[in-house]
Amino acid sequence: MPVPKILLYYAFTPLADPDAVRLWQRDLCESLGLRGRILISEHGINGTVGGELGAVKRYLRKTKDYPAFKDLDVKWSEGSGLDDEGRSLDFPRLSVKVRDEIVSFGAPGELQVDASGVVGGGERLDPTALHEMVESRDDVVFFDGRNRFEAEIGRFRDAVVPDVSNTREFVAELESGRYDHLKDKAVVTYCTGGIRCEVLSGLMRSRGFGEVYQLEGGIVRYGETFGDDGLWEGSLYVFDGRGSIDFTDYAAVLGTCVSCGADTNRMRNCADPSCREQLVVCDGCADEGARVNCVAHAA
Image 1: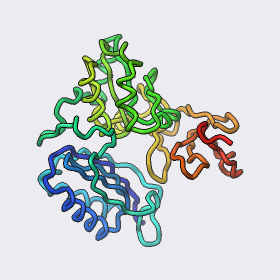
Image 2 (image 1 turned 180 degrees about the vertical axis):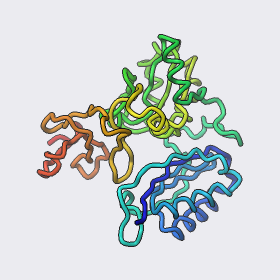
Image 3 (image 1 turned 90 degrees about the horizontal axis):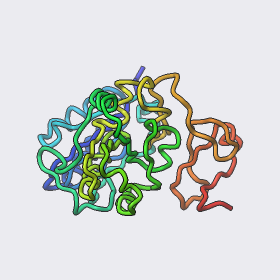
Image 4 (image 1 turned 45 degrees about the horizontal axis):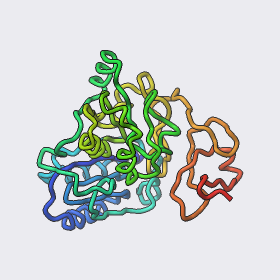
């Protein structure tokens, strides 16, 4: 029986002709029956694709054959299923686009990339090195590099969660002065797969944060290493049809339904069609078809 898989990956590397890479990636994915989202810029590539295991493996092999992408940072996860044509149920379509940024912080001019990756980012910590640092120091602060709603169902213990609804709000948030008290502490940035922190850690360093780290491989790689037996608590929000994933069958449930107050890790869109805010909504309220709006679009 075909096995559904999802591949999450990125590479910061200079690309002379992003549009040529876009056409190649689009044709490659279409030939293999893959769906997902791929962003390309002069700074590199950022993608999530899903499909049958063999097709995803072929995609990865051919993509890494391209010299600029030989060191792709890659994470695998289980897909929820395939349709009758063997296409991923977790993505409605294939989208391959060229953008100014592969992570939309709204600061493309600040990002410097060379053949080795991002220039001036935070020091990398793998999950084991992270634990060693936390055990040996008392000034370590986790800084969530995701949107606020993602942290509602899962986050590192005692993490600072900035009040941002999208990545573009981070620059103003950092410059607001709210986090100046962290500038003399060991700040560990983290995000889903590591890519947002590649940029965020550099933005923090250039704004006076003295000791900045980034969790290498993000929450995904941490979960692969320690599951729910470490410093992570709850479920991981993902931007595809799965909604969220757990690392074990005993993951803590941190979310609270905005409608009835029940404990849940389920999320759904704000009922206002113009809004992209995600809300924590339990299965019961979702199944009852409750119209749940965010605060900005409350009736």
